[in-house]
Image (tube, rainbow, N blue to C red):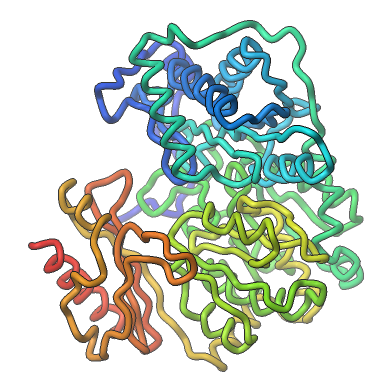
Length: 539
């Protein structure tokens, strides 16, 4: 069967933006329907107005719930609010500002009515709270990240600047659903009379000098391409080029809520995931025109790195290179600062950490787990396999506590400038030193009951003694770094590992697996992983 993955989108793939926005205002959700209630995942509430899953009712209720949460927590400072380029983001911002105004919350929107990347908003919160104010700021990012154009997203970042933890999101979601069930009687709304502004772009770009070595990039004369993929970083890249006098071209400055210029993802959907070869097909066309070409998703919290000698880098490969480089080129970082990774990221990072003599801090899936370490400097880098990461400033203080795709894209140019080698070439050197791991994620069908059981599965329920012919040395249901539940299991041998977690959106569970032996060994690991998990789930 032929696939259109990696092919340009056609007219039939595009949404009708007018109908999408009309549905936002016209459709009213039924919160007794699980598909229409407010649910916060790892990155906020997401859904489509077409499905009655992201509508004016939801946003009014969620914003009022955030106001109530702020009151409960004693948060009295400004609330930074920004939106990405999705069609539902501006209507959601309008609704949110009405609720914030009626509740006398001081909301700060972008000074130029520009789009606001997630890292720029995270940075604004952190800088405000670190500069001696008597109150604390927090924020709202209106984005479904890399999701298709039909979706909207709404995310709360508390005073630490990163994604809210499950205690906060559960409280907000429960309160929002209660407000909707009560027909929004306790939701206050008013037309904002005067909304304060903040220069997110100017503040973020100026501050980049404290974390990236632009002198080295400029001195090396690198020819750089950046593709915002129609997302919020579009004007940021233009200002970065101007402010730091770089030979940097925004290869695609278009913004279109239909994303009609995109190439289709693996499932033939329009999706802005810069780690996907199918999505990045149009960016790969520039592979040999630049020393480094990068991509970002719609809110710029993810990165994709393209090199002339390696093409699009696997996110795990780039994370390993970034760790190797940063921990040998940031002399002011604490000597005991750990390397943070999610437990489904590559073991190559473990081997790099061991060679550097650095502690590895392995946490469950979700960037929120890195927040405490990135704030106090005990973790200098936090990264996850889905192409999201952030790290500390040169002086070892906090940068962002949310993922920063712009930063990781710029780091690729710094690495190329300082080492004289592309990140792809540096990964090849790591392979020579540590071996060549093969990594893949696949899905396995599961009922809702099986998914619930997997989410609570204890490692001790795994009875298997071997995996793909090797003794099992660990059965984890808690992350080694912080002891938090992983919401699934990870099984480890000396040569391979797999992790199984239930999907939050589909009736499947995800099997992440890696082998340092090769492709055939990986297939064996994946096959046995399914047998081991199914046996533990009683079927």
